[in-house]
Amino acid sequence: MTLPTSSVATRDGVWIVVAAYNEERLIQQVVSGLREIYAHVAVVDDCSTDATAALARAAGALVLNHPVNLGQGASLQTGLTFALRKGATHIVTFDADGQHRPEEIAHLLAALENSGADFALGSRFLGRTTNLALSRKLMLKAAVVFSRATTGLRITDAHNGLRAMTRRGASRLQLRQNRMTHASEILHQIAASKLPYVEVPVTIDYTQYSKAKGQKLSNAVSILLELLTGTLHR
Image 1 (spheres, helix red, strand yellow):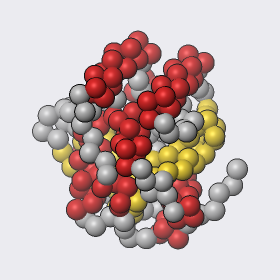
Image 2 (cartoon, helix red, strand yellow):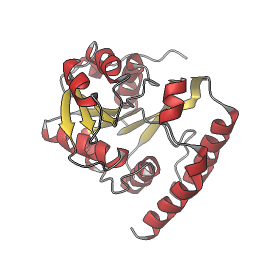
Image 3 (cartoon, helix red, strand yellow):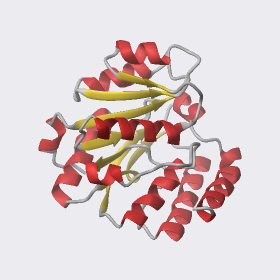
């Protein structure tokens, strides 16, 4: 499916937020790809023990450092807060492991502009994936069923790190689930905001590296319990 590009894609107000922890293997490549298109790339280094911060900075990113490791949710919130303070009109979250394609960001921005929505959520199940194992696909599909039931959002992909949002949308997010449950928490907060959202087909390129960095199947139950606990205490 070919989607129109957006005039938003070249605006100075677009900020890309990348949460990173020990990503020295690919962070320079990821940032360089983003910087070819977008001027503002903020990498939140979550107390990495390798050269992630230095390599991201060398590739042209503005690097924000966590003094202690807090997890991806906290890193995204740090990036969102910073981008808003810098006057961002649109914010995009982008994974550090190389599984997203920078050129597809324009599709999400176009969807925001053309639909009037405040959130554009990438969906691998409307788009395509490479090297997606059946076991991972089943886990992702189960997460969709759970998220639909608990948020009421008619989504097809619950754990996709490629998202775009307007300033108004980003201002409604206050992530408190610091670990991997942040993806579900974002959906809960989108639902609570009652702001419009759209899904956009995107490509996820799975590699051995990105699969190793991603969520393991053995942790799925503990993440579900953590999310349920967080939901009950909100």
